Amino acid sequence: MIIVIGSATAKPGHEDAVRDLSLMHVQRSREEPGCIAHNVSVDSENAARFVFVEYWADMPALKAHFALAASQGFVRDLRPLLAENPDMKIFKAAPLKP
Amino acid sequence: MIIVIGSATAKPGHEDAVRDLSLMHVQRSREEPGCIAHNVSVDSENAARFVFVEYWADMPALKAHFALAASQGFVRDLRPLLAENPDMKIFKAAPLKP
Image (cartoon, rainbow over all chains, first blue to last red; front, side):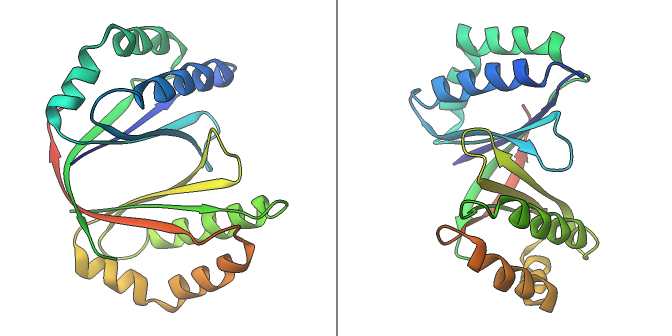
């Protein structure tokens, strides 16, 4: 399983635009093959920072997601609204019992 | 490396109390040995749902975290404020190159 944890910080005044773009992106992504979960949330310590938590079945599914015109359009539309470069961490992950 | 992804949904009217308890918990947890990161955010599709993203060096560090009176106090204080049982997923994770 693949976990992606990303974050993007909006420029002042662009929080709503970043949220709306991000919601469209995560909701669209959930329909893609191999997407187990895809959510965006707002950092409780920084209302401009958006946190993405994604679960993918495998790397091919994630790579197909990255290659989609819609995904690339999201990144292109998002970038000018951000105060800094977005962060993305990708992990190969195996569930453990709590 | 260990990733913990949790979520807790507040009862209506208890969102602020859940946020305040959660912020104290994540900020305290960051000081613990083996805690790489510990953050809470609010689901952009459900303002009552709090998402916890935690990175721990290894399982012993996470188990020590769970065993702390402060951690157990957080769970005890949080539970009556929640609309349903909290969810917690734990993963053994290896970083991959984007």
